[in-house]
Structure formats: C-alpha cells, structure tokens
Length: 352
Image (cartoon, rainbow, N blue to C red; front, top):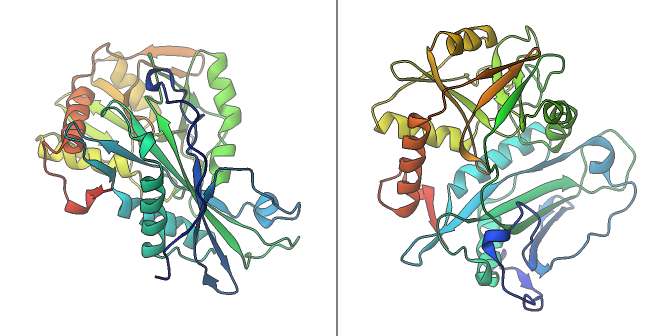
C-alpha cells in the first residue's frame, strides 16, 4: 500500500515509566514517524528510532518560519479501549494552517497511517487511566536548503508521542498583556504557526515576574478586547450563568478543538453560550461587582483550567474561589472520554 510505513524498530525502553513523576513534554516515544514531500508528491513514510535530525544550515524553515504543528491526545478507558480524540478535526486544522503558509496539504490517509503505526509500536506508552494521556505532536516544516524568500519545494512531516499528566498544576493566574500584540487581522493568529508562540515568550517572562503562569492577550487595534491566553482559548462565566467566549471572526484567535468541544458540552448541559466581544474593562468591572463568576481556559494540553486571578496594569483582581461551571464542563468532557456521554460526532473517538 502507498502509505504503509517502512519500519525501523527502536530498542525497548530501558525501564518502565513512572507516570506520577512525568514532567510535561520531556519524555518522548522511542519511535518517530517521518514523511517527506518533494518533487511535487508525498513519499512513503518511515517509522524510525527517535533521534536528532540532520538539517542543512540553510533549511528554509529556520530562516523564514514556514513551520507549523498540531497537538492532540490519546487516552485509555477503564475497559482497556485505546483511542485518540478528534483526530480528523486536528488533521483538518493542520491543513488549514498549511494552506495559510503556502504548504502542500497532508493526505488524510497518510496522516492516519503514520499515527496508527506509531501507536502500535508504542504500546508500552499506554496511560494507566484517564488522568493521563499520550500527547501527540505532529510538526510540519520546510526543508529546502535555499536562502530565498519563497515557498519551499520540500517538506518534512514528523509525528511523535509524549506521555503526560496535567499541563498546569496548582492555581493559575493570568497577566493581561497591554503593550505587545499576539496577532492582527489578516495575519496568522488563527493557525498553529510555530512563530506565533515565539512571539508570546517575552510576555510569558513578564507574567512570571508578577507571579502569573500565562498571558491574556488583547486585540491588536484597540488593546481592549480579550482574545485568548498564550496557551488556551478563554471563557468567561457571567451571572446567570452565561458562558461567553470571544468570536473567531477577526482571524486572530486559534479555533481551538477543545473550545469547540466545550461549546457543545455547555449546550448539552443547558448552559447559554455566546460568542461576543468582551472588553478587559468590562471583565474587571464584572469581577468587582460579582457579575463575573468564573474565567477559565481551554486547550488540548490544558483541557479546562480555571483562573484564580487576573493581573492588569499593576493590580491583581481575584476571581471567586470556586469554579462550578468549569468543573461541570470538565466532568462532562471526561464522560465523553469514558464513553458515558455521546459525542457530537462519532468520529470524535478514533479507536487505536
């Protein structure tokens, strides 16, 4: 078959994992799935031992940023069923990102075959329960050794796995970024381009200096309307309850898969959901007067993460200490993963 990977097996893992002690994103699968695009076509993929990549110093992605990635998760149910969550949606978003960066689309069958073969060769990475997951990282970048500002003619698609627990532990505070901008209309804020995250790192340092773990970005034009956290989409729970999240229409916010899942779950629970602009001043006033009951972030890595406080213009604004809506949504999310609640679409659950 065209996409049946050529396999080069790696040695067994020298010792079993201790899941309770895993740092997020620091332990990797023994194997790496690799597919190359050149001469106008995708070639047969390989499964090979995890190792450093030989790259020419002129590799296009290193100079001109034609690089993107995805992030999705695989789980195991109490009955031993292994599955990945919303694989097709992540593949579609990868290709949406690729289109914006003038990169060729990745065939669905190629992506699925690489992923499934990799899973089968990494059975020892099966999580012990739904408290843990296998984080799946596809990364796709230009490889032409050519110092010219133009789309590359050759590319690499890599997929590997990393076993993980929670992304955030303990209470999470957000630093409201008022000086720098993450994305502007017409730019690349709506895709998972590698450079988008590099542009947030300096703000992350500022956040850490005031005891925060993440930045909350405002719109580039007015520096007033909230958009998203550096690592998550943002939701606000207003008195009612009403669930509000910023709209995607400006093209400056990543269309999060978990964001979409949470909107669906809220609707099934009878919680009103609105996609509308929220001013940072309206948000803070709502905190002061008790109209804002919760703020939480959503993302594949972070899942659903409640916020303890917002740091804005030198002052810390504490949020209510309880998070009943976020907890109810997280419970519903886990029920979908366990098979106790029907997903919006059957292909949300992709058996391994």
